[in-house]
Length: 181
Image (cartoon, rainbow, N blue to C red; front, side, top):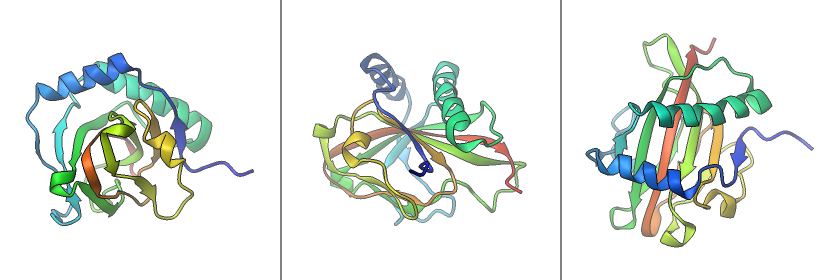
């Protein structure tokens, strides 16, 4: 049996924390999501940033550290951009194939590990499936369970298919480390 190139944690975020994340996001202003190259057709969602919340960052860091020890072994630090994302069916909410590492960035750090937290219950929307392009995908039903967390290398191509009913809500973060060499 081979080791997957991602780590899935079921029920990693309890209902209390899910609600707290929603409350934090409600205090912020939502805006139209953008991509590195401003490709407006590649993505349709609304986002707000929760990177300033140290408690949330530390919680996600603990999960990322565990996954990094178990699977990846990358040099990463406890610094991350944290994005609260809404994909609405009325807006054809989706995110086409992409990677989270910006190879053209001029900074000395790269996004190395991506983490996504499912904040919607699977009964609240249809479509909106997360999938990888070049590696085996996690179980679709498990991914849609509220509180499930997925950690994966930021260079893996992935997408969120169009939401066809309701609203899909997730939290994503990207933990950085020294540039890939």
